[in-house]
Length: 176
Image 1 (cartoon, rainbow, N blue to C red):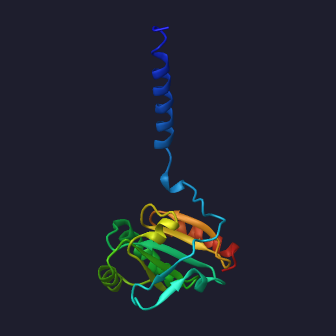
Image 2 (cartoon, one colour):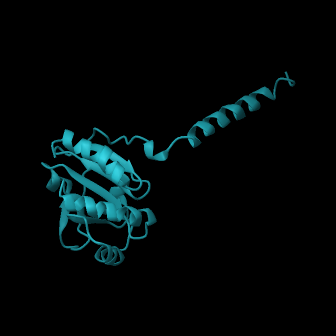
Image 3 (cartoon, helix red, strand yellow):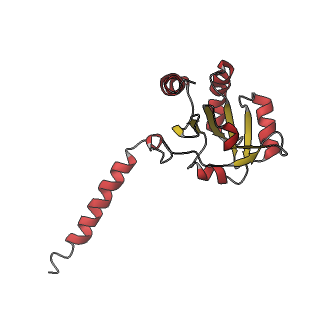
């Protein structure tokens, strides 16, 4: 029995190596969100530019809208920002920002310097609403339909290709 005792740890090691190899070969942006097809998490947050004014999920019902999670400290957010500004100019749908784990003054100054594509940017300084949406990094973007159901989640930088090949077709389907 002692001669075969090494087979159990060896088998466990091989199984672990296979699981790790599979996991390392997957694209983290392709991890499906458990929110797709489910109601967006309820929230009420203050506007980044006006702490006395709040916006809630209930305020956005009845329209298709985009939620873009961003932060002034986020390098990839800087990369995607011109694409987001250009898309906002088309007026296809209202874009709301979720300013994630940031400083209000720094974020406000950043938007003032690079342009503001948002109908409103909501301040999530502690990241609680981001957690409810399953955000594990910025930028992330969600499309929410008229009934408040999450229809799409994109992890990472929005590119013209993502907008043309994923977002625009979805908007046509949602008749937005």
